[in-house]
Image (cartoon, rainbow, N blue to C red; front, side, top):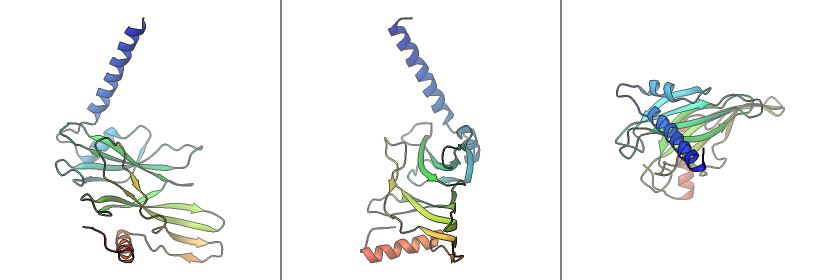
Length: 210
């Protein structure tokens, strides 16, 4: 087979694979969010947290959000990755927009809450994910809580940009240190995080929010 013919075959094969992938991401007219996720979840991944459906960022068509535990590998830390399935721009298929990664130590991270807030001056609200990670160290055993913020997707992006807006401001602990002293997390739910953000805004001056 000459190089021209081989190139043609490779292009056709790539097109077939791409078309099959797009076809898989077309949601059936009676397909529930749970049925859609069960059909498109990557092989060997495990669903964690709840399946969400929202019209945030796309008022025309509801998007579907799910979180997957990636396959366990002894050479890597346990990881959870978010997937936002979003139908945009008049096409039939849903874009698979990934975000995360949420990294554990000996156990998979636990997603605790998902919600939206306006953190900047644009019109779109940002996605916030509250999660915790279990640690077992000589000087601390328990959970570390944190919150991650993600910007809305763009036309070209197939991932959500992680916004470094909080630093370690919302990291808190639940457990005991090496001396047996108990830590109670300050930011362990949505309400406490919203209140913390309000306090940060008051300390740093007014910012737009809705």
